[in-house]
Image (cartoon, rainbow, N blue to C red; front, side):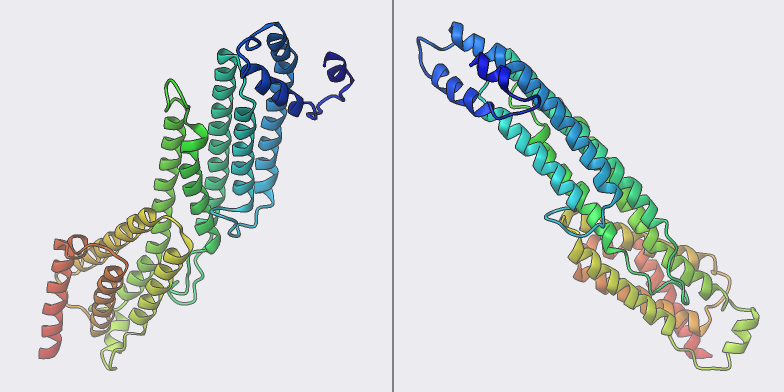
Length: 344
């Protein structure tokens, strides 16, 4: 056996099946288990195992770096091409080492810890690269034709969210120890990924809210006493601006529902988006307590507020969130404004 190993080319792993064959036989034979030849077998192959793990760690690290440089952010499995490749390699490596059934408990525990730490490090590196790309994508300018209501949240960003979600799911298996402190490595990486998802949700909602911000700024030009307001008071208002925003909401709700894999993430994003929209409209109206709304403003806001509620209700947002005091205050204000318009 020693002669065969000496003749083996550097960084060649063709002899591992020999180890598995001999080790399985020896460990299942009471008189030979942990005997002289069994210990010699372990001493001969331990450096090869360590070298193999070292090279695989380097290989996976390089694949993450090179993969994300050319990643096209298309759906692949539950994530993207680079993340799927990384998670498959980490799982395959852990399965391979586990199937060796290393007889020495201390060395076996060392290998397990090494692989779990490696998985946590690789997943964290993957998450960091994804967040860098997500931040870059969400900072790209909104397509402004009028108020940005043609904007659709990029499918690529949805894939990025799915990558982090999939990493979080797989981390429990890849980073959780089978003995001792089970969460030694998993707890940290789970916290990292959870914070990444929270930040993604925050940026996603902020991006979508910027469209409403632009719309409200345009509506502000119709405030009572402005030049535009006096001109448009001579025409019958239509709510094309409100309708375009309603279309924007429907398009983005559909994209997020279809492209993001995790229901909890989707619902959390919808709830936050709904609340923030209602708060923005309420703040805008509060700044105009001393003036009456222009008919154009009223027509647009009435449509927007009612459609927002209906659309988000269809997406599973609870009545407790939908029927907030802020929403009720908005409806009350719009009803008063509508009554005032009818008296003019």
